[in-house]
Length: 220
Image 1 (spheres, rainbow, N blue to C red):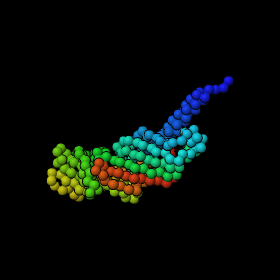
Image 2: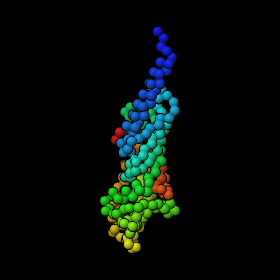
Image 3: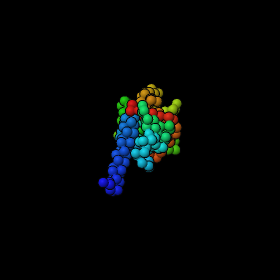
Image 4: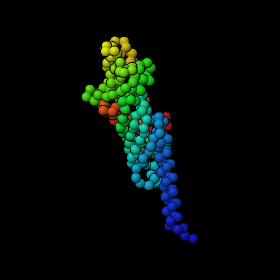
């Protein structure tokens, strides 16, 4: 008895849906922990069944909101994996690039959570000077100026000025803030072997571009 064409099509469509879900879930499982949040996976066009059989994908795009990156939280990330192989012992990509945006409020939270005991409130950016201004205390009684930069392959945030009640604070107080900020960043904090290559202070926060060569998609 011949199987109706509509039944074959339904079976094929069902298998394709399952294959696509399995493929995306496998990659998501490998990357979610690295970014500390749920990761959406787009494996591009083309049959997922063939991709699984070939164990190869030309491009994979990952999207994540409220991601963790290099000591910063609350980032939005879009990561592109090129020439992805699904073989053992772990999937890998020949090249990785990422575009990250970090809102000013997330940068303020980084300072607030760094053990400074600073009453960080408002946050705004100054693209002209490449700095972030944090309001301290009620009604902006103080202001902390931060300067982000890329140093030795990682993003650093340096406190360049501190004012409180109209007075400029220098010396040990500013040094202690920078010591705490420095300990919050480690080169190993960047997932997928990514390294920052460009940094821009925007009207709403911080924009980063990161890149990496051959990368293994470990679950660590």
